[in-house]
Each structure stands twice: as structure tokens, then as C-alpha cells.
Length: 418
Image 1 (tube, rainbow, N blue to C red):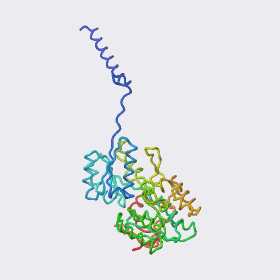
Image 2 (image 1 turned 45 degrees about the horizontal axis):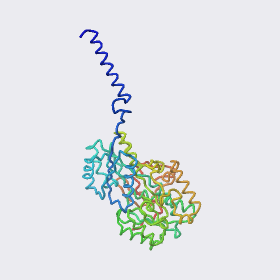
Image 3 (image 1 turned 90 degrees about the vertical axis):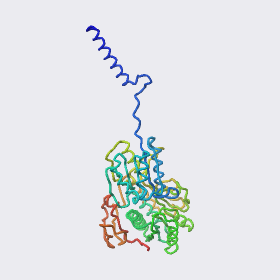
């Protein structure tokens, strides 16, 4: 081939290469159109529930959260296991990872902590556990909890306004940081409500020994009503027994963890004055978004509250926690039968405090002092403060780590029944 021929071949090859490149860029190859977008990164959210789902407010709320995450993200699948104890955490987690799980969560600390031991072995998987008092984290081991205390404070305001005997009762699980912190918020709300109304309200707490003991919960609720003239009752346990007692005794019930009327159909607003609803999906949403984005160093301590929100698949914007009843929120969540019994000053205060917390402008744990009752739970390096000790002054905001791991005492004035 002469020099001119070789030149023509080189030119032709270059033209063909340029044409192919242009075709790819413009999507004009046969069967083309616009260049295909990369497929969304798939994820599998696996939740290990410590209890059964049906008939429980805690695991029931986590299950609803997993379902809502799957509804929002077409490339995220939700799987779960129920009644998972600490001895089953690792075997179930590894089974689910083999099946494709990319985010594995324990919905209680006592059975979620063993996931920490898997974090190094599976560096591309996120692991997570609810916080009870231990705040240990790793790069891919996330600890999380909602600021339920904010909604509990609002419930306390309402309870103080509804009691006619001046006695409010709490059926509780056992002394632990999570319970003590949540009970403190409710109590602070009761006390502010009582001051606003110029009256005295007693708060009685009696423990059943565990989270889910339906028979014992019924017995404790009955004792509170019969012996201590309680006419408003709430719980820090997981069965529906205290609600059953409230309904039978025709007293007001204040719910926890989930809108039990709106989502479970338990009882009605004739008995349930208000509940608080926990949207665990707001916390899971943060984990899922980080994982989908390929973030190798996600935020490992999530303590989200009323100012933190997510948008559901149907466009609803919801905060992590809120007072809720029969699928209504805010002041509208208060039972139509209960609302006329509540002073206008309390209704205004509930609306005001809720709005302030939604905007991040106010927090009950910052506004109020913490004064020890001298009762609670001694931790390894944190004894129970003596009665009357001002542990925190009004106007100071404790750290997240302290609230989650060191709040080990009851507030002064509470009556702890043995």
C-alpha cells in the first residue's frame, strides 16, 4: 500500500472512532436513546426485634418503621426476625447478611450489643443498636435513640390537667437509664402543669420487673388505682394490660411509643387521653441514606427529636416523636372527650412547648433543674446522687452522652413504690 493509501486508512479509523464516541455520548447507538443511568444501589434493612411484633408498642413501632422505609425507597428491602435474644443476635445477623442484608439493627440494647463484635468482620455492613445506657460505637456500629422525653413532657402537662384525685400512676418495667430519663420528662411535665394550675399532683411509680409481663402489669395497674386512687395512668412497659385496666376502671390512659388507637385500634379516645408516637423510621432514614451514598464513616450516635423530620412515601413530613392519638397530632391529638376537662392555660402551654421544640428553640431538659430523689440505679462509676442534690441547674443542657448513659436517678418528689 502506498503512502496515500496508508494515510486514507488512518483517517478512516480516526473518523470511525470519533463517530462511535459521539454515538455513545449522544445515545445514538442502535437501541439507544439517552445513556442508561446507573442502577440505584440496593440495600436490605434487617431489624432484629427482641419481642413479638403483634400486640406490642415498641417492636410494633420498629416494624412499622421498617415498612415505611421500604415504601419510600424502591431499592431498599426490609426483613426481620422476632423474639431475638442475645444468644441469637449473631447467628441471625450472619444468616441475614448471607441473604443480602446491608444494615442490621437490634431494637433493644441487651440483644443489640453483640452486633458490635461483627462490625470489623463485615466492614461494608452497617450495624446498629438502640441505646439503653451503653453508648459504645465503632465506625460501622451505630447507636441510636429518639428524644421521646420531649413528647413525654407534653404528656405530663396533659396528665396533670386531667387528674381529679391529684394522683397519677406509672406502671414501669425496672430501673434503667432509659426508663429513668423518660419518667423524669413525664414528671417534669406533670409538675409544670400542676404549678400552672396552682395545685399539687403526686406521681407514683411501681415496677413489674421486665418490659413485657402482661399479668404483672395488670396487677400493678390495679394496685395503683385501688390503693393510691390513681385516675390517670401511663406505662413504661410494653403490653396492653395497663390500658385494659384503665378502660375497665373508667380512668384516663396516657400511651407510649405508638398511637395505639390510630394504628392498633386498641380502645378508643374515650379512654386514651393522648399517646406519644415514635417514628423510628426517621432514625433508620439517616442510616439508609448514608449507606446508599456509600458513606464509609456514618454518624454513629443518633439522638433525634421533634425538630428532626423525614418525608414519607406519601409526602407526609413527620418528626421523630410527637403526641398523637387516633392519627391526629399536637393539641388535636388530645381526646375530644378529655379536651373540655383541660384548662385553656394548659392547652396553650402544650401548643407553645410543642411548637418551640419543633423549631429547636426550647427543651425541657435544658429549661428545668434536675434534683435527685435519692432513688434510682447505681451504675459502675456513677452512684445515685443523694436526695436533694442538684445534679443539673436550670438553663444548662446536658450532653447527649450523659442523657443516654448517665441519667441514673429519679427526680425529687416522685414516689417509688416497692
